[in-house]
Image (cartoon, rainbow, N blue to C red; front, side, top):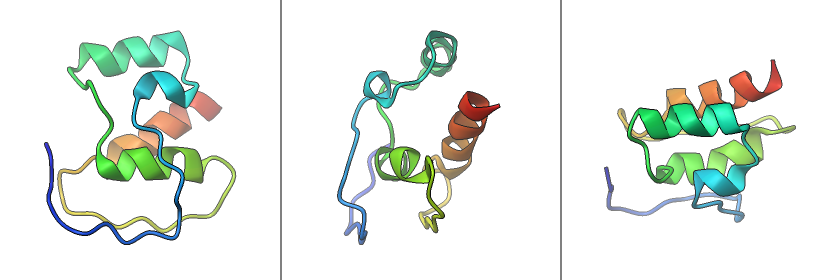
Amino acid sequence: MELEGIIDSNWNEIINSFDDMSFSESLLHGISAYGFEKPSAIQERAILCISGYDETAQAQSGTGKTATFFYIDSETH
């Protein structure tokens, strides 16, 4: 789902591929199996940022916020 609009962020590092996010092969396989090909805008910014930092992320419903936290949690536990 591509959303239009302005993305206001003080975090300027973006990772626009799940493969570049240093996830385990099993997590990448699961992401692919569910049909996700490219991270959403919130995921491109929040996944790297969340790793080791406090974060506040805000986005519309259905943009992948919950999945973002799941990805990080599954890699750290």
